[in-house]
Image (cartoon, rainbow, N blue to C red; front, side, top):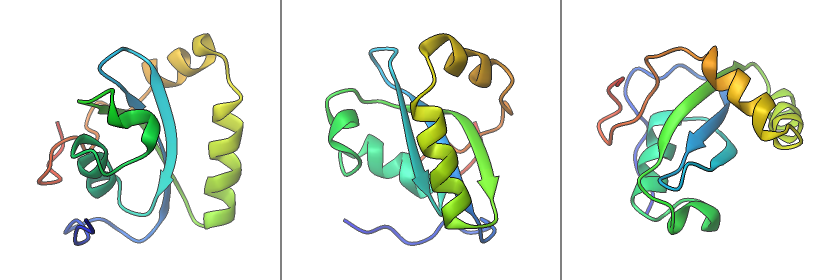
Amino acid sequence: MTRPPTPGVSDGHYVYILRCADDSYYTGYTTDPARRVAEHNAGDGAKYTRGRTPVECVYLERHDSKSDAMSREYEIKQHTRVEKDALVADADPSLPNSDDGAPR
């Protein structure tokens, strides 16, 4: 199911880290973080997250190009759990997590 863009989201390319219900992390790319979190929670996201809902966005980076964002996504996916924990610890506390796109 395709959801409409989230109002107020600026154009950009984003890398995000989700914390899943089993406390694992999932890293992905999107152009609309709030919509993508909603898709994951609805079971319409990545296969990895489907059995691990609810998910929560715990880290978000904005990039100007898709190429930069996807390179960073790959880089983060190579990180250890400890390195991802460090990124998450320094994250902005107001990330998109609800179906309506409102910050948590």
